[in-house]
Image (cartoon, rainbow over all chains, first blue to last red; front, side):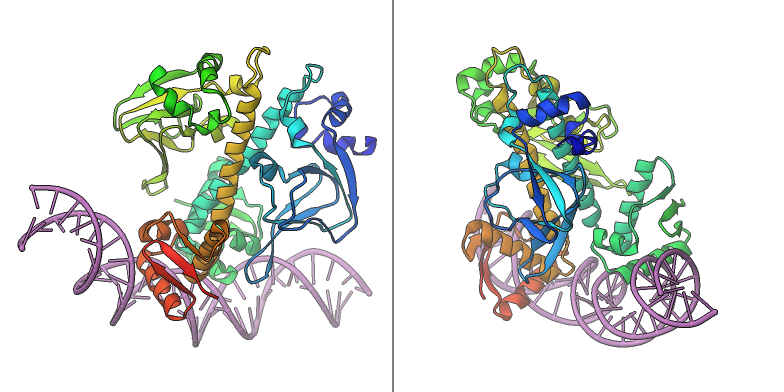
Length: 220
Length: 220
DNA sequence: AAGCGTCTGTTGTTTTTACAACGAAAGGTT
DNA sequence: AACCTTTCGTTGTAAAAACAACAGACGCTT
């Protein structure tokens, strides 16, 4: 476990907890590490859900299959990140998604019930864990809300304006860069890439904005 | 406070807590009731956020103003329901939305810090509160994810199929009713009502489904 | 340097959606 | 019964998006 300490100490779930306390915490949470080979499933959609985990090494993918049978990658979970916490918190018994180990990976499974019930006094960091857990779930909530707000615009142009405005607001500047390339931005906005590119071009021509690669500047 | 006990005992936040314990709980959480007249703002967008609350009577609206200045009702919060919990959990200082008292209302403000830090032993229901809180936030998360999954479909038809399929799945039957009228469904899917109505008509003609009012049956 | 893959912008065509306008049905009120 | 309101479906037209196909720019590898 020692070798993953530098991953765990950066994990959001353990934020504000002293590195020296992490070891005690792990046994307090009955955390157990599991190794996965590349291209193995951690959970299959429909499976009984066994508990949340934190990625120690490698990368997991959260995968949803739609009614056509298309495999859609909903999220990627890297080192130090949690997965399954929403289902643990919401007490969901059967997973609506699959979890897939895209690379060889190590996962630390954590007992949710132990995490949320403060243990026998000894373990003072439990409060902090609960605080972190709530913050993580709530932050995800906020991010989802932002996405819905942008996606709910009817036209590609309005989606772009909504997205870019909110990025500008976050950056507190009309000049900012975005964490997406064109295809990823189109996926995020749920529009066609080429049509979006064309719309960006028109908006540039109309003097609404400037851009180069992933750097944007809003005018007006 | 007594007169609101039957509201509080049904509130999700207090689920699993004995009615007789609620009074003690309220003082333990430093909860304070506030009355609002109709058409008053509880919070204005941009305001410093003072804390979450639970609606004792009346109805609040969560309102977002977009860059055109359009007022958009994001959610309505009725008796027994929480508001602001996401921002409390995520430790957001400045509200990105306004909270508006659509009717005359009473609100019970709750100290989030006290809610998440188990108090001096005496108060055994604190664990349950934390558990409830996490479940509430996580459930919201799941609902948002469902909405995004549906909204991310490109065409009206695919949105309808995605939404109706998920409703059928929830109902565990191909016959089910939905909680929306046509306009509300169109808003939820973020499409035009009349175009959606026309698409539903075509799908019926093609033998994909049957419907009458808000009762649907999926065929095939 | 040549070859290859990826990313991006552009254009023309086809398909889909939004929009506006209207009529019919159902429910409530006076 | 007459009236009003709300809801829903239908239609035609205008606007927008998806789609397909391609070309230029860039970076990487050999």
